[in-house]
Amino acid sequence: MSVTRTTDPFEIDFRKKFELTDKVIIITGACGLVGRAFCEAVAQYGAHVVVADIALAEPEKFAQSLAERHNRKMLGIAIDVSSRNDIENLKTTVLSTFNRIDGLVNGHQNKTHLKFVPFEEIKDENWDTVVEINLKGTFLTCQIIGSYMAQQGKGSIINIPSTYSVVAPNQNLYKGTSLGCPAEYSASKGGVDALSRYLASYWAAKGVRVNMITPHGVWNNHEEQFEKNFANFSPLQRLSYNHEVAGALIYLLSDASSYVTGDNMKVEGGWTVW
Ligand SMILES: NC(=O)c1ccc[n+]([C@@H]2O[C@H](COP(=O)([O-])OP(=O)(O)OC[C@H]3O[C@@H](n4cnc5c(N)ncnc54)[C@H](O)[C@@H]3O)[C@@H](O)[C@H]2O)c1
Image (cartoon, rainbow, N blue to C red; front, side, top):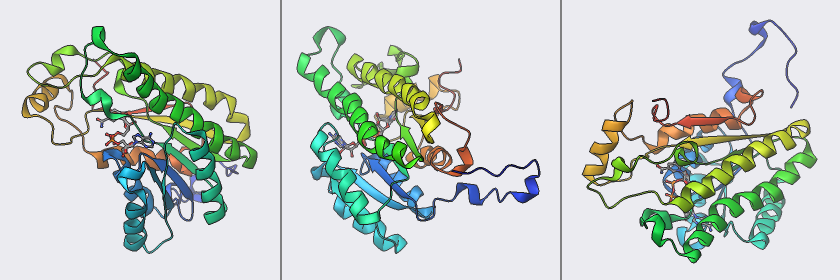
């Protein structure tokens, strides 16, 4: 993108910098808790949303509801992020529908980590599935969609690691609950973090910005004890809501963040400051 060369702020329309009008934004895991808020927020800022999720999540249905709500063309497509064929097909379908791709948001995750398994008991299959979806899935979308962006000389990619790729989980958080965060989740998200930094540097000269958003403790009808424990350990003393994560996405996808790459924007209520 071309950036206005000026020292005069009166020449700048700052609100316009946040607009996503007519941009085409692909969101994986789009039907999930955070993904749904991402889709609605991006649609409110004027974008065509590509709702990409597994078939079971019915991405076409959600895309249809967004299209009706915003009176704009949207696309829903069933994918498995760990399949190279599916991501190649995603790219081809988006380009034949819209003829452009401006943003890629990797919001998918494998859910097996919600059933906590102690480190001593993690099975190879569990480890492989989580790494395959969380890390390899992000690699494939970045490689296939990001390479197209690099060829075009512009694009914005946002990957989603985790607080637990920044710090280790405080095991006291889970006391009196059935919850926990297993090692394979942290490890896969650490890979997402490293890959994102690598690509931020690798594609910087090609006009592709690669950033991260780290959500934390997004409320989803959690067990009461967990919510209490969380409040005790959190500087902001509460869980977050999915819509609170979306502001960061608009910033990072839009021209408002034109000089930002390789950043990890933590929407974590101050969890890692103390
Ligand atoms: N919720 C939180 O508190 C929190 C905290 C830190 C990080 N995150 C990260 O934020 C992102 C969104 O989290 P969420 O809470 O919305 O998760 P979620 O489980 O509600 O949604 C994840 C989505 O990914 C989809 N998905 C699963 N496997 C897939 C595959 N193989 N191919 C394509 N899609 C697949 C699921 O169908 C689902 O719609 C994830 O990357 C997660 O790790 C979440």
